[in-house]
Image (cartoon, rainbow, N blue to C red; front, top):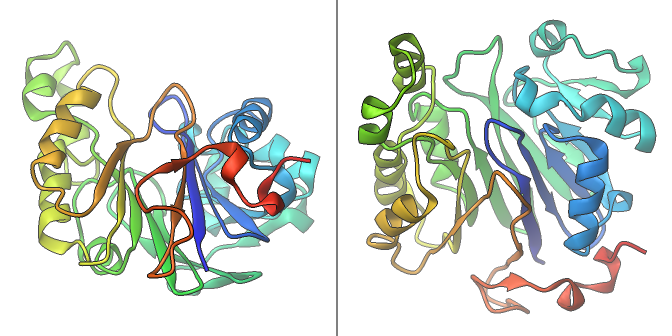
Length: 278
């Protein structure tokens, strides 16, 4: 069995990641509008009809701003921790709010979603892995430092969205005020390019086929810069960039019996018919 992944948007202007199989899918975060998510799914050959749940990592606006409309329009449950929900100011129908607990995997059809704590300046932040058919995909963004939870889960992934938020020199020499620079590079801020690279080179699994560098800063990073940095150490792992302006390609994450060549984004016409919009 394969999992299909795409980033609908990744950055401080909104975060939303899709992971699914032939039958069901989940969104990790909903930081773009419902309308924009619909457009990007359609262009990708995907559909809200397959999405069975939304999982929220923390309460910052760029991770939740589309959740209310998405949940209401499609009657999709939102898994969110109690503290995150309290501080998010989201107003969701009670029937659609599912309390998220760390280390308590949630079964969504044939997908198993596992939440675990991470270091970030939010009330009760979590990262996630999604497993189906023996394939595990991780979503590791908004992380100040790679704690043991992140390391352990990253090392089990066949594919991952990994934050590479800033280049240290660009941040230091940039125009941000000092307090904001210190927040970003603090232990509850964001991963730098080199912090992300250290996690990748030290702890990636031998079977990691895809890495999508995510949550890049618009002011303090360069997609080409970080891509070139990781390509020097990529080995057999395909390196991509999750854009802050548009959806990424749809990637097939498979085991030995891959139906699509690993590492290549899939054109919508090549997706299984079950994943088409109509």
